[in-house]
Length: 261
Image (cartoon, helix red, strand yellow):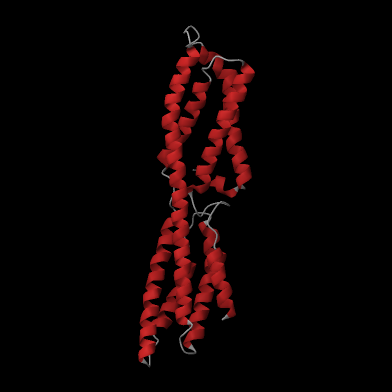
């Protein structure tokens, strides 16, 4: 989809989408309908024929829209679970380093605090523009370097240190998954099929033989619903893009906790 749709508020995006399809339906009803009707005006029971074709077409197109809506929602939920898992892993890492002796404890906490702040203030806004940033790499590299320099002096510290290193590696894996999820979306070829199918659906309605006002009303209702469905799928298509996106609230809670340390 075009990137600009994620820079406008959801309500305006919905109005633009529905307005486009309704306008296309109404303009076609007034201009293209008389031309298309010339091909079927001599046939008897033309409404039955067009209704049969439209119902068959609607089954396949409705199935496509339904599957895409479910896929977009499922993808949104999966990415949301990735973010929640990453936040949980980071929270566990904070708990582990809080048990380190001074001054290592304070230095490690400061590294995680700076990293979490950059994640919220810099990385997340860039993700909403589809950009995967590397600002946090330097901070996490410093954290890892300070972590591996720590030399346990007791058996308890050895166990604690090993668990912290394990938790750190797990967090890096979940962070990588979030970075890969930034660019996840429905393939463009499917969007082409959806849009072409919507226009074909509206075109078939133009073939019905009915009064102009009834045609405008019924065609506008169908076009508006198609616009709402496409708006719904597009809004959830990229989980990090636009206002309908995953928030960094779990990391904000961790940052508030780190600020109190």
